[in-house]
Image (tube, rainbow, N blue to C red; front, side, top):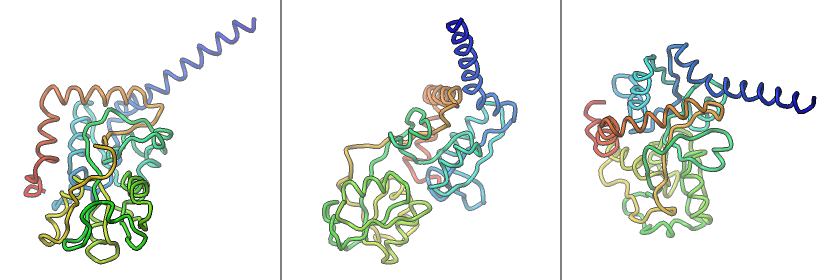
Length: 264
């Protein structure tokens, strides 16, 4: 009798789990809207352009996802430290930011397959004495990072003797802090830094040649743990995007050139 009851309970549990897994994807279709959380101000990933429209590589991917789902796209802006809470609270279905999958983050959310790879770097003012990352690892050096970012983790690990100062917002905030003299150096992914440098005075900031860490870091979309079917759908979408050329078109325009600056 107990065995039969346990079997029934197990079956009910599996049915409920299956319903939960499918709910996010089916809810998106029923709602007719895909809600995507981004951090604007993080060009070329996501930002608000000169026309007041959301733009960027991840925004274009999200727009393509919505088109292929046959639903409308709703982009929702959050600060970096508000992205994961927005996803967990159900305000967003997908988190689309230049976020690196980590074991700690995966305790809260599920990352899809990586779609791009970047490398953490150290940058400083032109004319500063720093020649390699180790030169910034001193008690009298203040290093700017984005709050809650992989750059913060990397800086604390590889520059343990430096003073770490956190900022909320996009990578532009650290460059501004550097030029204003609030920090002596900054740590962020190299693409995010190189993308914003043309917006500042020429030859005012220098990226050190040597990179931090053990190699390139992956970037990935993320969903809630229970959104298994949506997680599978995003991974399948990335495979289709690679095969039909839309992935290459996106990356070449947004990540491997600055042509988008003329249009946005």
